Amino acid sequence: MALLGFGNILLLLLLFENSLGAPGSFSVDYQRDCFRKDGEEFRFISGSIHYSRIPRVYWKDRLLKMYMAGLNAIQTYIPWNYHEESPGQYSFSGERDMEYFLQLAQDIGLMVILRPGPYICGEWDMVSVGGLPAWLLNKKDIVLRSSDPDYIAAVDKWMGKLLPMIKPYLYQNGGPIITVQVENEYGSYFACDYNYMRH
Image (cartoon, rainbow, N blue to C red; front, side, top):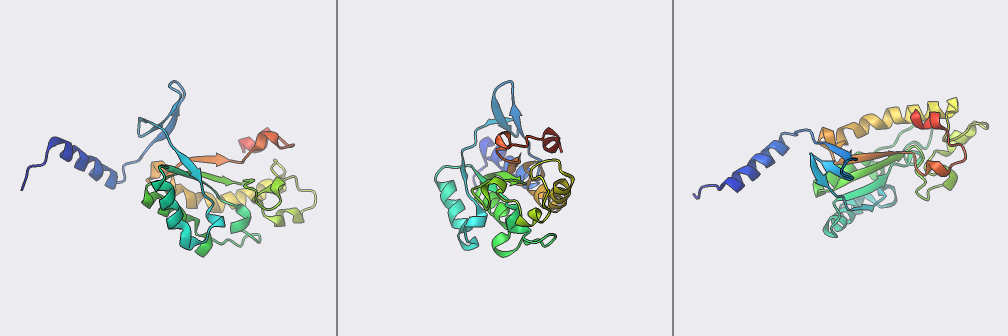
């Protein structure tokens, strides 16, 4: 049996360390104007894929094609109205199995830029409230995407369900998610509610 060279031993040690689930880090280096992944300068090349618009049977195929095209990251939305069609009635199985999609991306070797909203636009139903569930409008005077107490209560309940599901998939927890976008295109929205964004 041939002796392992120093480079091979180093590679094995790195692989072993990664298999132990060593926490990763992803950050913005403002001084050097770059991203850093595990302390090293990192450039992601990303494409957009919406699991909610693709039959689950094709998810692996599409993600593999993105990876083979040279992408190292994907961007995806989580449409609130897709997962909570009625208040308190959540659906995260079958075609809506967001966690399976995230795990599949990781297994293929893709980082994830996650966009859970609550507003996503995404050219989804009622573009001005893209991804927001229509049942929010049952309250006639609700002000969407603002610190309106009724809207905030609904958002908090939704995020209270969603965020614990996302947490294991964050990069620092061993998952593929390197960044999470809150809201979408908010600067052009009429409300421009800073308290809402802080919340």
